[in-house]
Length: 109
Image (cartoon, rainbow, N blue to C red; front, side, top):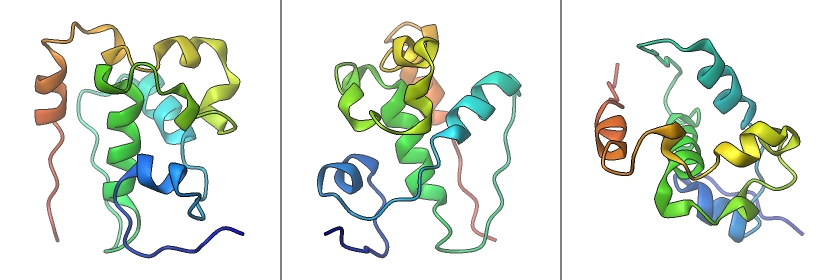
């Protein structure tokens, strides 16, 4: 039986501890294909912004290169090209990934 957790901010922990999770991995595909230079995510407090950023980071991070198991059974894993993209920094070299992560900013409104 899955537990319903509140306030979890680490995607890996949510998946590995079998905490109830509503699949939002389609966000990765939509965001990646939009090719926007800037993405503004506005949602109320406690709406999953940090968990979504954790999910996105763990999808692209070379640190999670061999952790496709985190995404198996989720919508992002349905397409072969995204299975190949997981853990590759989106094609950027490992040295560039920290700059990608630094580009993510949160503003509390």
